[in-house]
Image 1 (tube, rainbow, N blue to C red):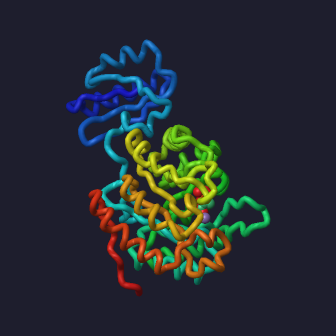
Image 2 (tube, helix red, strand yellow):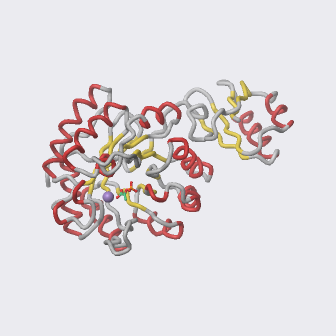
Image 3 (cartoon, rainbow, N blue to C red):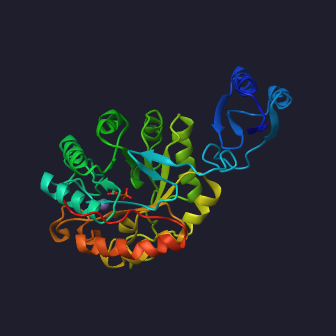
Length: 344
Ligand code: PEP
Ligand code: MN
């Protein structure tokens, strides 16, 4: 259920309605839009109390939210959510490129990557320190040491950091270093992790599980919002299909579908979607055109010797060329992109 307040509703009327909802044992989640305030009501909503709330001063209308996801729904918050991180806005006019290696491997590898990402106009630095690997014998990431390396690269380049958190108990540690907490595809339905990232005040990049529907993705985000954190961005990173030409199949339809029914930003990951660097630029171009708010791309100083996902990591010159290809497409769909900056 959502309660739409009149545009003229006073602060006292809004808090009166919130109090009434809470007194009824339900949770109230107000969203203060540019035009009106909408109050999301969470909990069993078929009570007589709600009928009474409907007649309270300041209430314009009460509408049941048709979908199982509520707080992520555009019906609840019609305006786009714009997430601001150290001067970078995600979900606004800018098409934001996040890039960096799959995994942090060394200080040199990450610093070189960060400089190249920044020089080409990338805005956020990615790099895994805790890695979810299919085989227990593969490189598992550098752990906290990797987080320290990320922080040093941020100090040098000014690029905010996105990095994965794999378990609820790691949320406090990773939150101390990261600007954006990544929940990986394999953890999209780890509900205790979703609750844990919901309880912190850090933006979350929520990747779509490789076997999950769009609705399941929206409901995973609902867990995070229901726990108090509304700074969530979705990431379409490809799903498993019968197709073997690519590592996964990018569901490009998910981009406009999610943008239509949710106010939260959508990022595309062409690296994990394709698994092959030769088509990453083409898929990124499609992402911009389809209305994504950004891409997250793997780049590496020496993909041939990368400890993880080398086949899908761009060389720096390929990344720079891709950025040049994206700019006119972004402009054509009304988005701007950061220009190249001089290498320091
Ligand atoms: C990653 O971003 O390096 C990663 C492991 O991605 P995903 O969870 O989408 O497989
Ligand atoms: Mn990877």
